[in-house]
Image 1: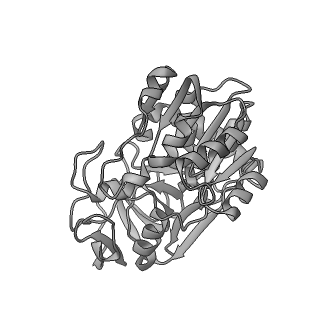
Image 2: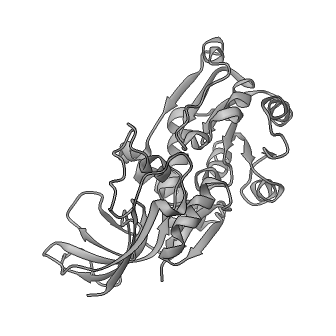
Image 3: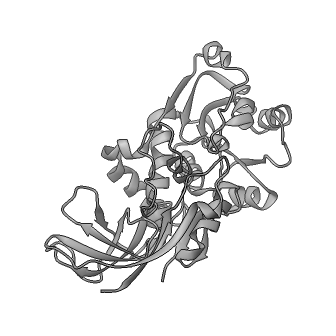
Length: 338
C-alpha cells in the first residue's frame, strides 16, 4: 500500500494561527476492508471555516482534535475499491482531509460522491460546483430571497463563495455589488464574474469611507447582504440597508483569531426590521441537488468563470491556508496533490 503524507494539527493557536500549529507526518495506508474505497486525492480545499475548528472554544461544530489529520474537502480518483458502486478510476469528491490518500467507508451517507468531469473540471467541485457554491446559493436563494430589481451585496466577493454569488444574483435579475481587497480583484469581479460594481476595501478602509462608497454603488440602498467578513465592513453595510432587508450570515473571518467582534450599531436591525440569519450549509443537504445543478450549468455555459489559486504539494498547505486568512488568494484556494 502507498505511503501517505498528512498534515495534523499539532497545537492550538494562541491568537493568530501560525505554521508551527501544524505538523507533516507520513504513514502507511491501511489494507481495505469490505465496503471501503482508497481515494488518491488530486486537490485539497482550503476554507476559512477551518480556522474556527482549530480553536477549542464552543462552536457549531466540534473542534479539530490535536494529533489528527486536519479536516478538509478533497477531490480525486478511486485507486482501489472493495465496494460494488465504486470502480478504480472513478472521480469522487469527499472530506478526505489534509492528506494524499484517504480510506473511505463508502456506505456511510454523504462520505463520497461520484462526479462528472465532462463539462466541469474536477477542481471546481471543491469551489463553484461544491460546498462554497452551494453556500452562496443557499444564502442568496433561501435567506436573502431576492425579488427582481433588488440590490444585493457580498463581502469577500472574489473568494470561493463570493465568486458564485454574482452569477446567481444576476440570474434572478438583481443588482450585484461586491466588496473585495485590491484593484485587481475588483476588476476581475466586474469584468469576469459579472458584478455591477465592486468596492475596494483597501481604498475605503473605515466605516465612513466604505459607507459612502456603498451609497454610490447602491443608490437604491441594499436589500440583501451576504456576510463573509464581519467587523467594520459589516458596520458600514448596516448603515445602507433598507427596511425589511435580509442578511445571510455565513462567515465572520475578521474574528477568527478569537477576539470578540463588537457591532457598532445593532439598533439598525430593529429600526429597519431586518432579518438576520446565520447558517451552516452542511445542515441543509436537501438543497444541494438543485443548487449543484444550477451551479454546474452556470460553469458549463461559461456564465460563471471561477478563478483558482493553487499551491503545490501537501507540505505547502499550512502556508497557503495562512495566506487565505489574510486574503492573499485570488478565487478558490486549493492544494494540488499530484
